[in-house]
Length: 547
Image (cartoon, rainbow, N blue to C red):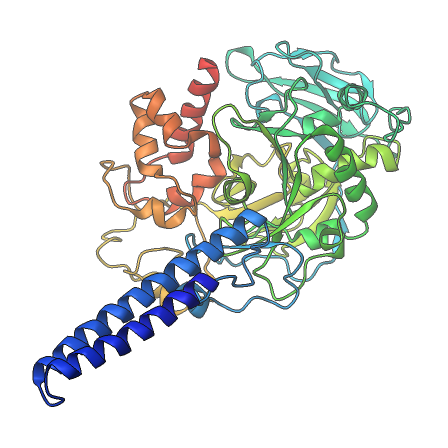
C-alpha cells in the first residue's frame, strides 16, 4: 500500500512539472498546451487505476493465502460487483466461510409437510437391499434363512468381494423373505418387526484410548461402517483407506426434502459423538456444510458442533448437495478419496457409543400433493412403502419415489425405502399425451424455460407429475447444463466423453467429482431429454473397473 501512495505522489509531482514546462514553452492560451496536459492526465488516471486494481487483487490473494477470507468481509480496496447486487445474508450466518452459488434452480412443489411434528409410523416390515450399495456383487453371501429370528444389528449378509464389511438388520424380528431379482441376484432381505425391539449386544469402546485400527474394526463388526460412503464412485468406504477429508451436508435443497433441523432435534449428543468418531478416522478435516439461505438459523446442534470446519452455502439447489460443497471447499483430484455421510448416518454411528446399540431409527418425510397429509414420521431404515402411506391417500395412478423427484428411485407399493433415503415422495403418474404441448404451453408446470412465465412468480408452487413432456432427442449443445451445475465442470462435454468411452477426457473433465444427484437438475432442464444420471453412473462404473 505504501508503494502505491509513493507512486501516486510521484505522478502528481510529474503532472505539475509537465504543466510548468509546457506553460513556459507555449502561451497559456495555446490549444496544444491543453491537449498535452489532457493526454498526460488521462495516462495518469489509467496508470493510477491499474495500480489500484493490482493492489486490490494482491490484497484479496493475500487474504485467501492467510485463510482469513470468509466470503463475507471484503479484504480488497473496492467492493465486487457481485457484492453490490448480492442478496443480504441472514444475521445468523457467522463463524465460517461463506460460498455464494449463483447457478442452479429451486423447484417449488406442493406437498411439503407443514410444521415439525413427528408421528410414530406403524410399519411392520423392513428390508435391507444389496442393490443400494454400489459395487456390491449381485449375489452377496446371505447368512440368514427364511424363518430365522434376528436382533437389530445382527448380520444379514456381506459382500463376497469385501467380506469384512457387514450389513446388519435395521430391526429385530423374523426373516420372512429373501427376494431375488434378475439372474438370481439378491434383491432384498425382508424382516417382520417385533412389537418390542431387541438389540444385539454391543461391547463398549474407549474412543480416547483405542487406536484408529481398533475403531475401524469395531465399526465393521457392529454394522455401522456401511453408513460411510466414499467418493469418487459413491461406494461404501474402503476400510483400508484413510480419507483426505470427510464431508457432511446439514441441509438438503432438493424438492420437498426434509428439514434436518427437525431431524436432529433431541439427538444432538449422538450427532456430536459421531463427529468425534469421524475425526479419528481421518488425518484431514471434517467439514460441515451449513444453510445460508433460510431466514431461520440452523439447529444449535450444527452451529455449535465441535471438531469440524463449518462452511456456509448460499444459493439455489443443488447448493445442499455434498458433492457441490466438496467442489467449493476442497475439490477431489485424481487419486484423492474422501468420505461423505448424511446427518442421520452420523447419528447412527454416534448412537453405537452413546446408547450402546445399533439404532437405525430414521425421521422420514412423507411428501407430495397426492398424500392427504404430508408429514414427518419416525421409523427405521428400509421401511415398507405401503405401511408408511397407509390411510393417507387413495393412490390411484401414482408413483412412489424413494428420495426426491429429481434423483430418487421409483418403488412399487409393496417396495421399501432405500438404505440412505429419508424421504418418500408421492406424485401423479404422467402417462398422458399433451398435444402441441411444446407449442401451446398453457398448463403451468415447474420449468427453467422462459417460455413459461414462472420467472415472474418466483414463489409459486406447482403440482408435479412424471410426464417428461417429450421424448429423447438429438444430444445438442445448449449450455443448459452449465447454468444448472455450480461447479467448474462442463457436464455436456463430460457426458459425450462417457458415451464414447474416452477415459482421459472423462478424467480431465471432472468425472471423479460427480454423483448422480449432482447432475439430476441438469437432466430436469435437458432439452434433449437425455438420461444423464444413467450415463454418469455408466461412466463411473467404467472408471472404477479400470482402477
